[in-house]
Length: 196
Ligand code: GTP
Ligand code: MG
Image (cartoon, rainbow, N blue to C red; front, side, top):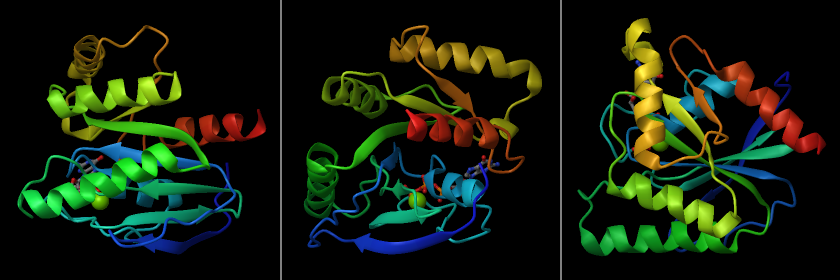
């Protein structure tokens, strides 16, 4: 898929009314710092269109990136980042839950997991939540593959699959925002879904 145009028409905070985009939305969910915003930049071939940071908790709004006027990539704030305090965190969780359960144009919820980490309780909950809400296992993107040695790749993916209790059909795409490996595979998948 060629990226012909990108735009950021909607940015939502806790008090925002969620937009009705009328286009398929591919939502990126995952722990703070897993690499959601870097994934957006790598896909869109923009260095820092989505703001990223080595400190967790960078994305504080729901950002709707319009691609080719055909679909949206939706960058969510990460979960599992408590520095904001429980009251603030609860407001965010509520906004994310509201969007995930009421968003009428959500086509796929994509779960991002760090290749170097065993999925934690929140990751497992998110996986199960997406499965229950959509009836399908989410597409899983395994991020930061460049941080592993080649020889560790297969084992890391196998361990994540086992910990999630994912079926053998569950689609897992190893990805690196550094080397861009996995980029084409994901975009082709989006293309296929859009044509269905
Ligand atoms: P929040 O907005 O806090 O939820 O985080 P996020 O999931 O959007 O993570 P972000 O994209 O900001 O990346 C977090 C850190 O990981 C940054 O320092 C990135 O440069 C780094 N990072 C993300 N993806 C990769 C990758 O594929 N390889 C390497 N080496 N670093 C990565
Ligand atoms: Mg982010």
